[in-house]
Image 1 (cartoon, helix red, strand yellow):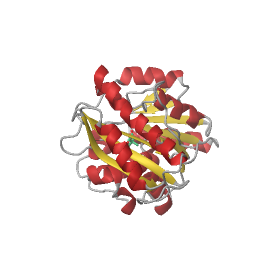
Image 2 (cartoon, rainbow, N blue to C red; image 1 turned 90 degrees about the horizontal axis):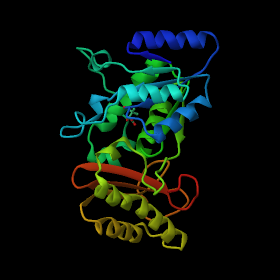
Image 3 (cartoon, rainbow, N blue to C red; image 1 turned 90 degrees about the vertical axis):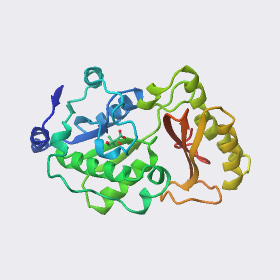
Length: 287
Ligand code: PAF
């Protein structure tokens, strides 16, 4: 496996592969790999001849007071794990090469970024759309795989690719969970034992809402009250949002149907913000 730091070298490598008729799949990450990342790598291997994993903690998607400095980093271990998965290249650019002096372009996706995480993290999706656009160009990816835990991010990237006529096939990959249901996330490493127990309220709430919807409770307002009550019954929780949206547009809905996604963001002990989601009436994408 190669580790490439320079964007120009990365592009040259991909051009070479594509010149021999090979397809390149990209898994964009910020590192600190868990099984969720590894499953994205496996999915990528199934859809292209070569797999590139980008590993870059993208400063422009973090807001003031967020966890850019403390975001967990473990490059050596990440490279070992990627190599075990048969990844061909880890692309780990330096910030100064991604955003050199004079950098002044932002890619901004519209309405779909204004709900959910976009509302509580202003500028976040501009940072994501900008870096992903750069990563697509640098790696010349034919395909890219994103986890569905950041469901809004996946929807934003899909919109970006369509709107800007990018020739990249974007694939969503189902959420990977711990045995007790907690969605895997690099940020879970911030949780101590008690906080990790508390964090299970996200998964439990999704399951509770799915059960209620299956039994005929289809008013979003009623389900939202039940979910909020469950989350707030755990001490140390603070709700950022409990939103029922159409999974295609992310627009809020009042009544649950087969297209409804419940998306949650909850802060645990004012320090760790976790997200999770599930479709409510279908098995696909279910918690
Ligand atoms: O999901 C992430 O890890 C990041 O938002 C991404 C897509 C790698 C862009 O920095």
